[in-house]
Amino acid sequence: MIKNCIMYQIDEKYRNSISVQNEPISKVTLEDCLEKSDSLHKRRISSLIKLAKNEEIALSDKIGDAIVFNANCEFKARKLIASGTSPFVSTSHKVWLREKFGTIISFDAGKKLAAVGNIMISIALFGTPTAINSLKIKKENFHSFVDWLLKSNRGEINRINLRDLEYGGTKFKQIILSGSQLHNSDLFHELFGSANLIKDIGFKSPELRSSKRVISCRITNWGGIVFYTPNMFDVEINEMITNFETYLLKI
Image 1 (spheres, rainbow, N blue to C red):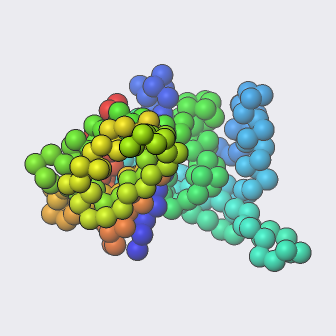
Image 2: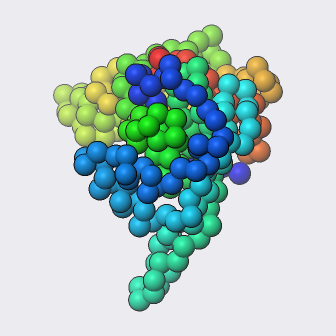
């Protein structure tokens, strides 16, 4: 089964002040977040209040370097028919907080649903709804990650989405390369080096220390991650996230 997640980053000024206690976290609501937000962010939180109700967040577990939360709410679904109303459906997703690297990982939730949990965690831990931010992974970070991935021919690149580049005297808005072992192609290296923006990259990881398995994955420049390898263990996800933090984010 494919697993989707989104990686976020805690603002650097809050990373040394993480203190997790279950009781204050479990009492936080979006209304609390609205009251404590500035005028710039009230509109965003107000829009989430229209989409979510009976929201709650609570400590769940610890997996490797991650503190695990359960984020639950009734979330407004899309209209089933043109003339109908949008029903609220019960949802639950996990959120990992990784103190060492200051990252937040939201599992199997779209951006709006993930925002509900992130804002509540942000208010509970840091007193502000703006401590958890979206990622913007630069091309230099992707270059660093690819260097690690291909070191000693341990990994494999099978897809890359390149933006804003020039090749053969022609300027391109987008070029997508897809195929087995793209990294063995001179074309890949030429385009990869000339692109001003890397939108996403699909790859097979080196063999994991935790399971000896190779993981098939794609990551975007805004932190969206898709694990295509079925039935992944938490320890495998933990190791992959650590690799992203170490070689891609360069925290």
